[in-house]
Image (cartoon, rainbow, N blue to C red; front, top):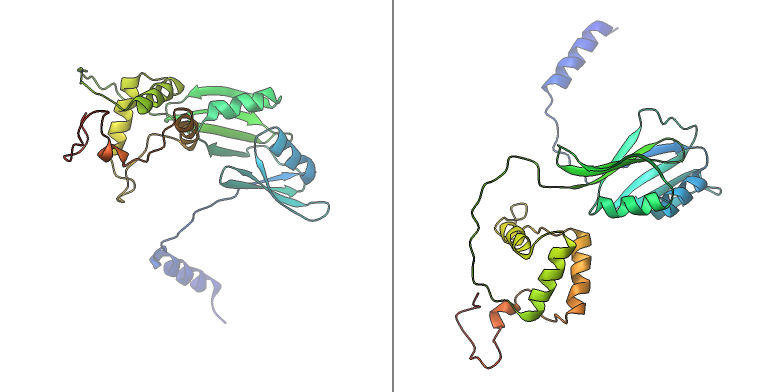
Length: 240
């Protein structure tokens, strides 16, 4: 018979010497236990802004609800909400907060800019579970003292109109919006050939409506072909 103590020590050594594998994990699913899955799904999809994912059973005893591309589970059982919470990072936390507040959702803490670089808030569901929702803010850190200078810039008329509306939408001046956009284009995206974007998915949806509004029917490479009315084509590239 193997001595249990020797076996325990040998197993401990084996575990200590084993290298952890490289793990690819793209999703995680928080699970809240609720007494009525159908009622919980209805609350999440009509009050909190989630979308239906799936239900299992008739009546359902298990379900998934989606917030953007992320899914969480609701499972039938006795709620144990003490110490349980789930956090989401979204494109515009203020927009979702106003929707939830208008639907009478219990507010635990209103939106605020936190020292950890996120503007977030907390709400409570039917069974006392807390949901923390926020979006990234980039005003954390020491001030960067700068000197601004005037740069003569001429823009395509429709593009200039879009930029002015986008800046107002984001609570910026046109100059601030240009600075943000330029600084992002100077950075690569996750080491790839692409560049980073300062725009959230919500911003991009708004930009799409502005492109339609202002009749922008050209793509991101069109500036190489811009020719002012009455001017000869410049083969050396666009002029600022």
